[in-house]
Image 1 (tube, rainbow, N blue to C red):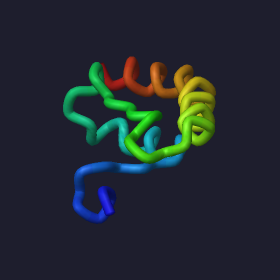
Image 2: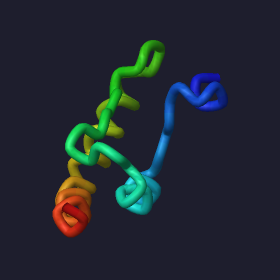
Image 3: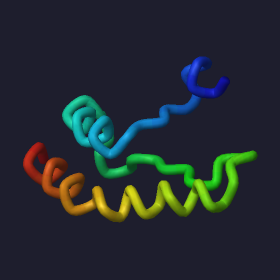
Image 4: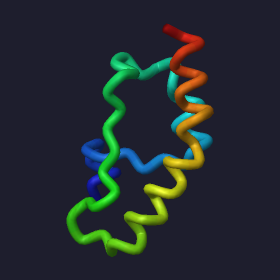
Length: 65
């Protein structure tokens, strides 16, 4: 429901990386691994995905700045 309302975006690592050029404030990309109602185990999965994606995310941001 949050995604349909436009209040929350759930992206795969590939989708996040593809959207980097269009993100206005690339220094403050938000991340909510413990969104209300989400099981903590799912939040940890999200954290691990972000951890794996961070080197490429940082490289893409640096290339644009």
